[in-house]
Amino acid sequence: MTTATTESTSTTEGIPATTSSKATKVLGWLTLAGFAVLVALAFAWVPEDTRITEQGDVVGQFDAVRLMFVHVPSAILAYTGFALTFLASLAYLRWRTDWWDMMAHASAEIGVLFGVLTLVTGSIWGRPTWQTWWEWGDVRLVTTLVMVLVFIGYLAVRRIPADVAVKARRSAVIALVGAVNIVIVNRSVDWWENRTLHQQSTLIARKIRDETLFTLSFSFAVGMVLFAWLLLHRFRTAYLQSQIEELEVNEALAERRAEAGISETPEGRS
Amino acid sequence: MFRDVWLIAGKDLRIEMRSRVGLNQIVPFAVTVLVLFAFALDTDQEALRTYAPGLFWVTVLLAALLAIGRSFAVDLADGAADRLLLSGIDPIAVFGGKAAAIAVQLVVLEVLLGAGVVLLFDVTVHRYGLLVCAGLAAAAGVATAGTLYGALVAGLGVRETLLPVLLLPVVAPVLIGATRAFQDAFGVAGAEGWAWLGLLAGFAAIYGVFGALSYGALLEEA
Image (cartoon, rainbow over all chains, first blue to last red):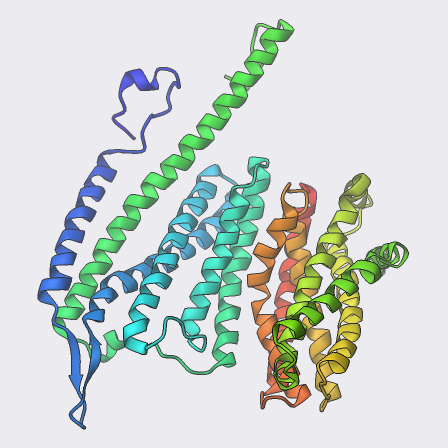
């Protein structure tokens, strides 16, 4: 999994001292390079978003359209993260392995990160474009906010000092209920104020410039690589953390045994 | 099964009747919140009347947090939860009983608060049927979701602060639906009150089923 130096692993046998690996290095450099290209495309290549109406007025998003290359991929990554949390939680409840639990935790954290980024960039974009920082009548906006709040609660549960299995099971149930809740919130907000400022499916309607479309697609690709990079690191951090906790428990056990004068370790403990 | 639900609900309600925590603390708290809303919105009677449905339901949700927390605190004291588990009662019945007890307390609270809203905020009720149905459906929704989340945080060290963080975003649809239904019932806004009732009933049904199914797993390690 890793090319960790031998001296740093000597105290913690078999546990790598880093979350880095060949794969993450490649992904990390790809993300950096991709991001550099994305910045160049977004600022130098993509033209301002303007359209001339029949009355001769110039309308559009102007320079704010460049924010879309952060906002839209962020939203997709946030939803990907939460979907992965949902699936991993389901898998955890089915198979009860730490692997799925760590996967759920890692993807939820990334989901919240990009969820917040989506809300912030959307708000900044909305100010010049919709003339408002926030619009309560917008279904997607409100749903995303509630979703982020639900998963912030999920992460709060994950931080509680409690038995690993108890925490994993309860977190999994919270993730499942939370995901189901997203659908209910979405429906209820939709009925609440049946209007939206969000444009419907610009991609499908091809009402979008070729340069913008290409850059947007490119930003999705960069986003996915970034997601994979973050997920690998976060998952491995979770794994290392669990190993440290186990190590500490074993050390404490060994100390107590030494105090009591029991020399040999019972089976099942190493 | 229904006998067991009745048994658990009766136990929880009897504890509340005897301890009077609900009547002596939760109801005064809820009324105080209503008074605070009046202070916050100034002496503008018109604004209070317009926003009465929303203020009413926010107050109910805040008071519900206390009632739910209390329902599980009672079970945790003196190892009562372990004995409940040992009693061999089906977890589904335990869930149903606890949710029913919380729902009954919420309905009592809604009646008292409703009187408070009529008196303090000068609200007149136009549709009693809608008011009663929405009140019952919303109480059922908050009670089922609340019982599920109450069990999720029970036994964790920080449950007092954790329950609001987890539960309030989840019951947001109840707040939206119940507020809209009450707006219609109070005649302050033209909302499709009966359609919103469907959302409230659906919410209660979904959380009822989900809670009943997962309650066994949650009880075992609490």
